[in-house]
Amino acid sequence: MALKYSNKINKIRTFALSLIFVGFAIMYLGLLFKDIVWLMIIAMVLGMVAILFSTVVYFWIGMLSTKAVPIECPSCGKHTKMLGRVDACMHCDQPLTMDPSLEGKEFDESYNSRKRQKETTDQ
Image (tube, rainbow, N blue to C red; front, top):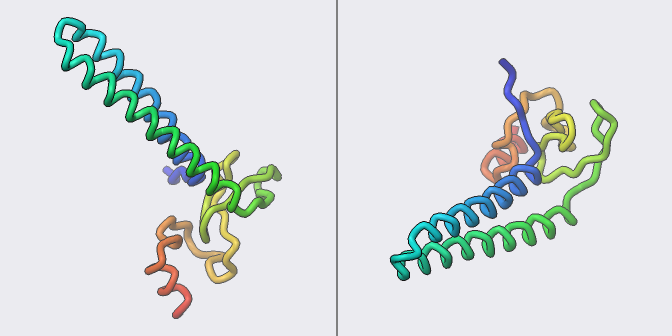
């Protein structure tokens, strides 16, 4: 079974969307405790904090997305954005790299870390 890679931007967007749903779920759980006012207020505040945090994450990934390098996927031919040295296509999950020293090597997301970047440039 082959590993399925996914784009970094899509991963972060999925995390932000899940924060919204978690926030709503916490707030709905708070409605179950209408009789215990302090517990309901805590649940409502925690739910609102999760939703506000997702807004911050969406804003951050939007700013990061403007700095991403737009490229055309060689596999599906659609335009995608690439963060780091290695990434995956947003549409077909094809592993991509723009670093010539990584071409032909097996796809590994750890190539984006500074430590691993120094190791590959030393070789």
